[in-house]
Length: 526
Image 1 (cartoon, rainbow, N blue to C red):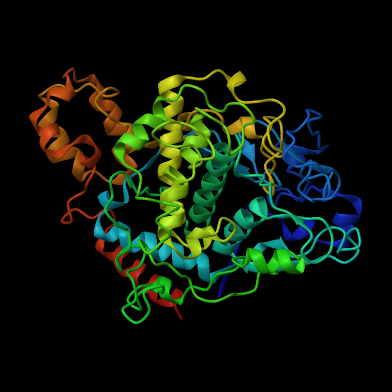
Image 2 (tube, rainbow, N blue to C red; image 1 turned 30 degrees about the horizontal axis):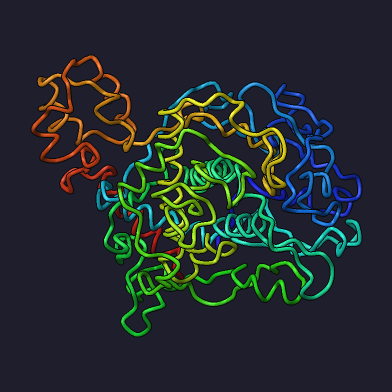
């Protein structure tokens, strides 16, 4: 496996006896050698301030779980970055900013996966596999509790790949609370699901994942594509060209024609960890599994429909009542899948929306803690994030709609997102994607972009052939045209959601880059 410099979770420099003993995670920035890049004005090492607001009643304990008041169990001093700088050592740029001094503002465009050219699909799979095969040089993951580490004197961390750092993060945020001893766990707790932080947490998660792929590959234009699963009749992305077809030998495995058939999962055996009262040790646990459609139909009747999505988007309250899985008429709870997408009532006997996709995949995706092992997770959550963005734009909620107190533990607005370093608060991602530097083609619809009939040939013949890094700039240039695009016969024939399908004869990367991508793909499977 290759090694690479990355900026995400549990920095190796903060996984030492000294760092754990002093509870300080303020590594030097490579640019000047000073902690947090202080000498260059990028940031300073500061005390961590956590909120004193009360949590909801779902988790009736205190001082038992390392995620409580994150990250104080591990660190009480971390880097606080200034201006547009970000990262555990302030060595990176905030989302949406680029350049050596992080002063170049750019907006990225996330596109429907079926609108990628063949060359882009090859590149996507290659990047995913490279991340899976590349050990993160700067990051490790926790394999024991702070108590098991004897309060830091016996560090317990493991090396994993760039991709698996994010698998572990999703496991760790959603795992059961260990109360001490085999089988002694609390299951009604999740710091990234079952509450208001579900959407902000996954938004931050995807942004970090996208950010790290750019650093790994050097491709600063890379964006996560989304899978628009409304009214899908099956797993449209389950082809060997994309996320892997079904194996003819074993329908629960991935086709050998896909590189994903060689992937091995980790942190996927939640029941075993709970029975033993331990954390995932980050070792491989077998092949990636998926058997879409052969799921429990008493739990999930079908994939979500366009009507389900529209009802969910119509709900005006972000969250309601106890702000958990029982919340009624809650946009968050209905989108997450525990509110009925026809009535809005919580604790539905059948799962819908986001949760329905996970169950439908009937494999690694179907366990909350291990679901990020399947690369479909990224495509799925990109579309969930797109729907979250659509709701934000439609209803324009005030910041006060996000709860300051009494949400399930980990979900109040001022809570730092576990287990993410650098630190983010939940409220930081209750904002538009535009403020975070990205847009969705799904949301560039007729109501937002008026076009003149004179623009139709330009859009149809010219815009579709533009390189990706020029595409979004031209979209906004076309706003000068003044045509009621809803009435366009071309739109009715093609529909705006398909308007960014790029013709195969116009790949977005040059032929020599395709050869390099193929070579890269071959090398990373060795």
